[in-house]
Image (cartoon, rainbow, N blue to C red; front, top):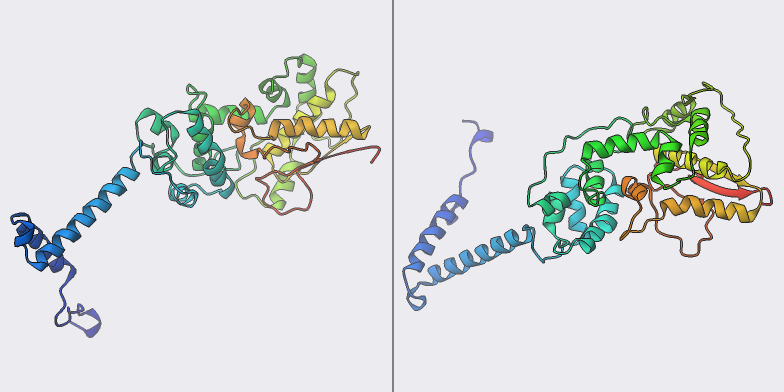
Length: 338
């Protein structure tokens, strides 16, 4: 055997780990048969070491139990989600800081602990284990499957009868149509005319953008968008009467775009400053998160939400999933008076 291949010998006076473990076991067994005052110093130390390890293992096991009151630190919760295969840091932070705490507040008996993050909310509620989630891309979405599963798990639990796959299918349908999204947003006055407008304007097709898309890919995707009626025309003029809700429809159409392509830039121009502020208040009203009572839209698309603007004066919306570092805001409102 060459010098490089020879095992490293245990030095004189040293004991190998395996031998040390065996000696400790013998000392513990011997110590258990004796009263404390009868034990040798080696047996006393061995039993102390053994008890210490058992207590540590017991505490660790308790921390991993569903009902453990040991509150987990946010840093550790983030590490667990990373170990589960989540990739998007914004999604991870959103689950740890917003969705999971809100779920605990609204579900009595669900503590904010290791089990909640290692097994997920629904598994905790059902007393089951986290299922194996296939990793990879999801057609029509810019997030990976495991990130999306966490958003559904921690954010859509109020709709217990909606499966993960159904949630994904509904997201795709809603993003693809301003008319369909308007119904989710409670626009009961929308009707056939608004459905016709959705077919007239470019229909934002979620398919074609991948996680981590580049600016070149985003521009190519935008250039490929088509109207159901007008084909590949690039400029559109919609003329409609007052009170036909054309401005509301246009803002929902813009909302579809920003939840499909977060790095897109939208400028909404109104006639007056007053109308401009009203336009942005409406758009941001959909997107300003209410953690304890989120709208159905926010339960579907929570990752695009932002904290509420208490002053209500901001004229911009910054999409938290934008990643290209472009200088423009995701959406900005202005007026002819500006």
